[in-house]
Length: 121
Image 1 (spheres, rainbow, N blue to C red):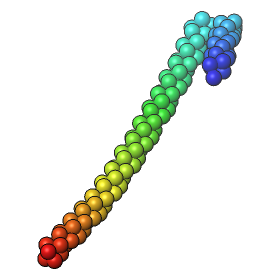
Image 2: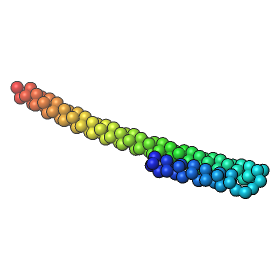
Image 3: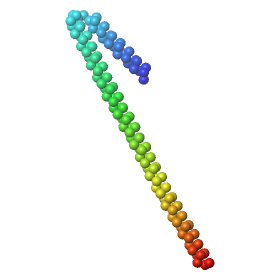
């Protein structure tokens, strides 16, 4: 990419130099020649400004798209984390409830066994 940019820059500089030499060597009056050179330079400046503005707009759009992409991925990761937390909470609650029910059942069974033993004694 950098090599292409160098080649394009060299071509533009060469074209500008060729055009300037052509204007300087043309059989025109000095005032007309200076006007032509001024017009040519103004056109080059306008083209450079337009290209710079276009490039700045493209960079701004690319940056905005990159930020939106990162926000989207971050939001998705947060959502996945929230889902995982909810799943763990649900499983923990389920296991805790089953553990409590199992413990209650064992305590009742032991209490009933002791009650039966006491009544039979």
